[in-house]
Image (cartoon, rainbow over all chains, first blue to last red; front, side, top):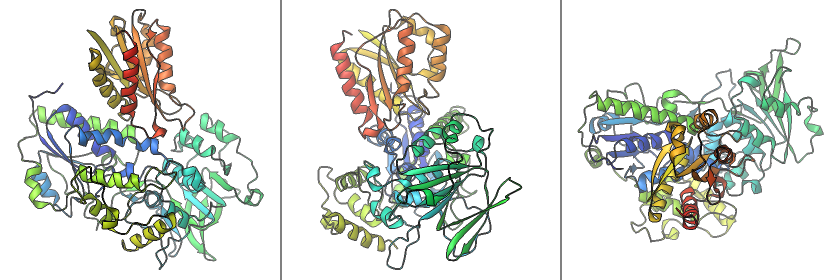
Length: 457
Length: 150
């Protein structure tokens, strides 16, 4: 199987999310024995698989089993805790590797772009999902004591793609329904002490253009604690999703008729957000409808969660590729190149096509090969987290799992790094007490997590 | 020496990984194997095969993955005679959906309808179980091929 002849270019992939891992995998198959390094700004690999895919979708996250093999069997190098753009200049990287593939994704929530009064409560779905996935940098609002401010009893979600449905589902499940997940229980409890009374989900388009997958809709509708009402579907809607939703049309749209302990989810089609203002300390989302008789709908909620896609990092984010990050040997893949569309299968396809294109460029001599690769950049780097280091973090997280959870992720970056470097002996169990006092009871763990998080700020 | 043709249908690459793993697991049984994507495999070549191993995931509403659909359509279209072909089958699915492992079931019906004989039980990996699909596939291959006269 191994072809020992043929080119062996040095390859740097920037970003260890699914697109970056797939590109490394396809290029490794093309050129067995070539030197491939995946750089990752976090100490932990897998990007959106770890921090974007919802915590209760462990089946989807299982794709990491495949990526693990890249590093443990196929000789791909993981260089974690290395931020291209801050820890190493992009130009140095591009000068040292034959091929550079940028797979940094789209880290920010796309803003709504409508007039929004200051002081209103608007947060991005990506921010929320990252927080519930234990991302170390917490950007959900917290009070001066470091407790996260509850999102409230009435929520609005703008957008009706899969990410929007993730938000609705995560907000509508009780803690025991997260069995087997690795959700941040403490953060969930603070943000959402109890399930909201209502969630209004707003789609600008009609059902035929709605972006969610049917399986996601079905999963949502099967939740035991929600009542669903559908508005603005129109009589002409057809297809399996329409069949599924039709039974929810014309259910009484009045949350007072919902039993108090249930969550009333209203799916609004053809509703276009126009402005967000404050109204008696709450948040008023004004939206327009195509209905001439009632052209405006006002929703008064506690928090608006935007789920309308993702975009580039801010200008001051030096890890975000700019136009200058280009050159003959520089390629882009995944969401960074195509925009925030498509899930894992589409990104795999995209990565395969890119790998074909790169291989062609090498075969037809368009790309010159022979640069030194990792050895040339290694002297520039400090505190690189290797894959073996990451496996120590992973083992720690699995060992610390609370009952009913598959792991308890470390939410503090310094703590991650101290576990990573705790011992180079894989048999050695890192002594968590040596790192930081790790309490034994759930309450003590919460208290401890809170303290650790305060130190993040 | 038996030669097996391992065919995978995948969208995320998990079935391809499992196919490679099963190929390795067959070595001790004296079975050499070739791994192909269903998307690249001409179905007319199937009738000449002694042993075929089908591996596929399930997507959407119990559908076959994109790469397996043309393969399935070609089976229906050209109806190769599989009366001398034996096959084993392994599916990847997620039991949190009620279409759990529909994909492999669809392929089993199709090839059985063309005369192929299944050996062993259908292997299944449940993504919801948290278990490594490669471990499950290897145990399945060991059980299936230890019992079978290959």
